[in-house]
Amino acid sequence: MLFGIPIWVFFCIVFIFVSGYMALRAMRAEHHLEQQHIEQEGQVYLTRMEEEKERRNQHRKVMM
Image (tube, rainbow, N blue to C red):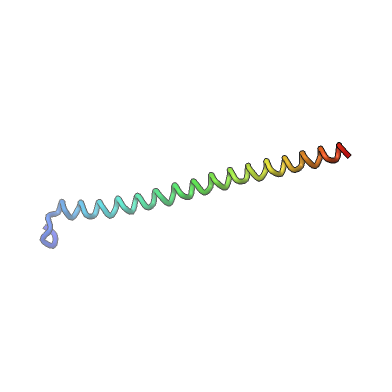
């Protein structure tokens, strides 16, 4: 017994805190991966916009 508490109760409490910490760590890592994915998709979108703008400019030059 530790502080009048059975050892298995103490281990359960410690496990709850460790589990919470691991969950927070996993959430942070997942958030970081999501942000990277969003940035990559945004870059693809911007590239397509620039290509479309360039295509329209080329089309206007041909029409003149």
